[in-house]
Image (tube, rainbow, N blue to C red; front, top):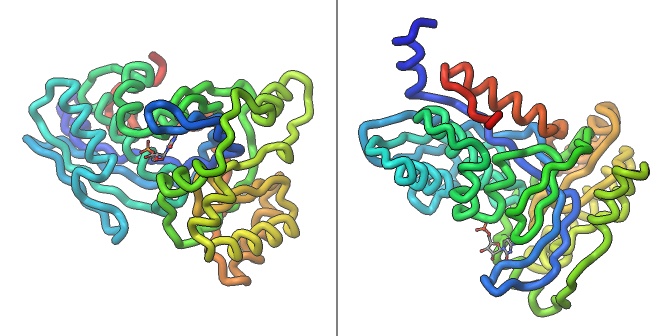
Length: 320
Ligand code: C5P
């Protein structure tokens, strides 16, 4: 590819923005900043949105055909673009186009992942070379889940869920995600748990799960999601779907099932594609919308990004 062509190509990039599930989520207490002190395990999955980023002479625009996605400054991807342009002292603008596949307000981090994708892509397109570490403060300001998507894979999230520690053991599984088709507002779920919240300095389940890396047994069964009960109180019509989906997934052979984040998406993990396919058939037979995909490790996450940036002729900054 000639230099002129490479330069022209760099003006437009299409990158994937992957979804996450929470493999366990503990709420330890309310923080002084109004957020909650969390301990969670994040896991990226192959289900993804596509984010197209095109450099323009000025301003930010956003287009998305999904009726529930705002196309103005209330969209996190828009704010990510604005913040990065300001940070870089860049006068040019950006036109964003989102193709949404990740259920909206479903606890799968779609909005946060789109925002992180914009940061990553613009970093490369503008040749800023900030990398994950340099983008971290910007990501953190945008939202508690955004920093995780700068890394991906299996990672421990502490503090507001924005202090990220990638784990040595990267989990591999087939994933079946149920789209309950009912958005749930994260802030409402957190507000609901406050009434019954007993502050805890510590809790042992995620600690035990992570440290089992050292002595063998994976022990998924010990993981729980502290938001599940509040989410089902917030959206009582979800309870029936979750109960049915859990029973069908376990029947098909799931070794773990859980609500993701504050819901409404519910998922199951499977050792093999055959059982996962069986679960999807059972769920669809019961009138439940389900997607099958695989987990995405830290390495695969990084490689798909490198590929996306390289096709556009932009130099990847992952390895910084
Ligand atoms: O940071 P973000 O805007 O993604 O968080 C959405 C909402 O979830 C916050 O407004 C807050 O109500 C709640 N939240 C929380 N504690 C966290 C993360 C999120 O209370 N650690």
